Image 1 (spheres, rainbow, N blue to C red):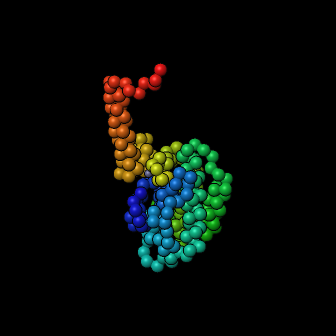
Image 2: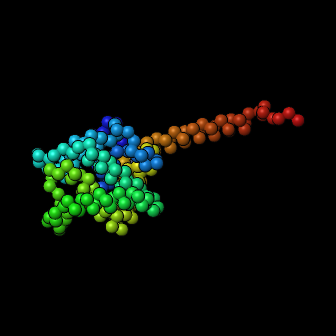
Image 3: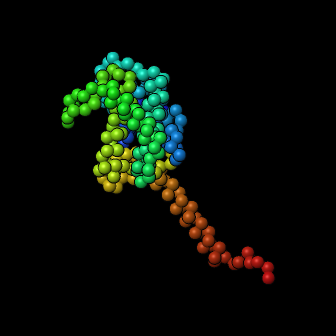
Amino acid sequence: MIDQVTPETIRLLGGRLCLDFVNSVDWSPSGEPLGAELDALRDPPWLTRWGRRVGLVAGAGARNPGAGELRKAHELRAAVHAILSAVADGERPDPEDLTTLARHHARAATEAVLARGDGGWQLSWASRDPRLVRFEAAVDAVALLADAAALARLRRCPGRNCGWLFLDTSGRRRWCSMQTCGSREKMRRLRERAKADRRDGRDAARRTAPRSDRAPV
Ligand SMILES: [Zn+2]
């Protein structure tokens, strides 16, 4: 929610990888990504930079993705955003979006090896693989969809032209961030209240003033 985001400055507020992945851009109410200047994944090499930011890419030697990989990442991002937005709203996701996610997930699984991680065995790819960010995001999105407890905490920020998704772990979180959408909403409400107060003041003045607007009899 700041101008000219980069992979290094974009805020990570989602609470898990696939949510930060969809939050790498702002979304219109109809689910379209809003403008390249708001996109932390707007150039192919930015995928690698973002992967480094979130700890997927470590060390040197990562191969930079090409334009085709960026296109696929954007396709996956839009599908995951649409699916999880529907789930957050208690609606059924579009089957086409589910198919898109399943396709990326299948590709990721085909290209993976099983490796021992911190908590157990997991799908894994070489850290220099230019498809790494997309594969990790697809696998994490499917894992989130399989996790009923996490899904129950999934929220979409109601801020105007935000559309960011996050996990409400406190049970009270409404906004992606109080510093951006939350404070903007507060300002909007204050402005509306001030306007209503002025209107009430005018109405009161009118009620006490002699009536000059009486219709002729
Ligand atoms: Zn927001």
